[in-house]
Amino acid sequence: SCAGEPGPAAAEFCARNFHMKLLKRLADIPVDFANEASVNGALIGAFNDLDQELLASQPEVTDGCGAAVALLIGERLFTAVLGQCSAILCQQVDSTKFSPVHLGGRQGIVGVDLVRMRIAGCTVDGEGAAARLRHPLGAQSP
Image (tube, rainbow, N blue to C red; front, top):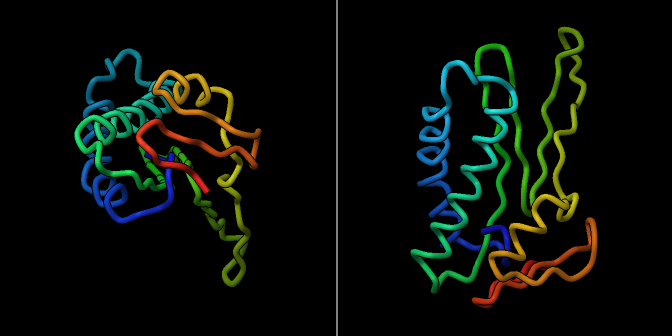
């Protein structure tokens, strides 16, 4: 869950399980519907699945974690950044120079996530980058 102080329990759970959630979601995409939107949906769904499983299977875990994911499929790069982390991808300009491409992060809570978080029982205080979460189990984002 990204609702909480960063901590080892949530981070370990996510590191061990995220790839399995994502692979299952990608495998479930029908070949005729494999497009950018379905891959983005698989990424978002994998995070949602992971969050729900962590909260359900380990209610004693009150810490949280963020994630920065880069998924390369063919020549297409998909990225997802959530929680208290940021990511930068560098693009090679010439043989000695690289130009950063900001992938996002630390942007706060976006509207799409608000509905899901409130359904899960979280309270959201503030807006945008200043927004903070409180989960009913006690986890709170800083």
